[in-house]
Image (cartoon, rainbow, N blue to C red; front, side, top):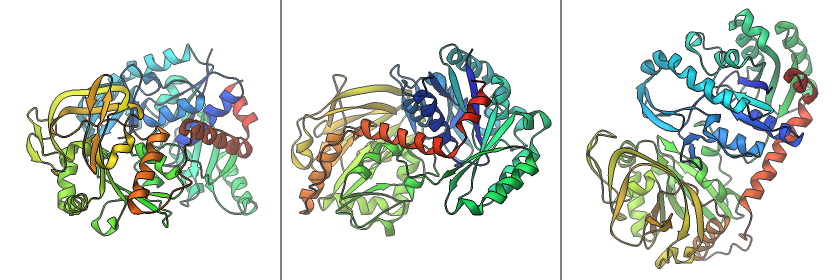
Length: 493
């Protein structure tokens, strides 16, 4: 019989995903076949499995930590926000339909059979399942229809540990307040607290730990220090979107679109010595970068209009016309073309003019492409010619397709062409195109040569091996700072 434990948090971005990943890695290291699970995820960063199904990237990251292949059963419901009040609902890896928040709230109970089917199926195959909650479990106005926090804990009969973020302050009030708002049955499920993101002298914290245990009658299982581990995240609150080290030889800018998706596509560049990666959403922040990347988006037309209104479109066009390197991925690729047609009213209908930096036309359709893709970069000329012949692997998630009117296809994927290149401007539908370390480091060298600087340290590296080392670092840090023996007692192992 599978063992289960659930990780909830006092707030969004408390560290639930990382603690879940750490436990998955620790259990794997200790010889247990382990799988992550999150009944409902809300994120624009998603992933396509080998069988063409869409799921949230947090569970993909946790599956990697557990040493297993990502499986859509680990995330049966994915909500992809389309605006302030609605989302595209992805059920069991396929688009179900668009719903407003109120529509989805009344539909939640109909999702329970799908959740239980996915969870029970995993439970038949794994020794331990680590369930992740969402947001805060103390949203009392939503408790009646809850399917992702205490509602999920009840369905799985899971003991719960609660993670609190001390870095933002108020961690004791958050933990005590969360317990206060639970009913008695829910309080009985909580077996421990983990205080996360601690900086400073832990001796100054000890009296607080004793007091919170006295107040709540719940033990503190550990205090995890603020970790600098380089692991993919999917949250719009990700520190990657605001962190910037500066003073690098090569400056790569990613446009922070309002509905940016799959920003993990570009994490690899931050690993190359001499290269900085930063996200900008204002013309004042743009500066004089060595490359501009327009990323994926959940709403290409809406974010293209924002790009126009913000003044960034004019800046990007001028930059490209002066020879600057521009690369678009997925929705960003669509924006670079001449126009986008939406006859099926996928994103509001009509035709919208693109940036005109690639001679392509995109036609939206109601059918969503979700597929794993692999292949090679075509024989290119001009700015990106040194990428010719390099292997690429990743996945596609897009509505509609783009036609090349004039120009070279960027890739040959699954025996079909993809993307377009016009000298210093390029685009592709392939998420993960830079995850091949050779592609990323070669591109960095192209940018360096174009600038007249040397990146001698931009040698080849194994991105997958690097990620594995980061999972081990995460597990080692958590193992040293929380009571793993008590975690196993909670599990009943």
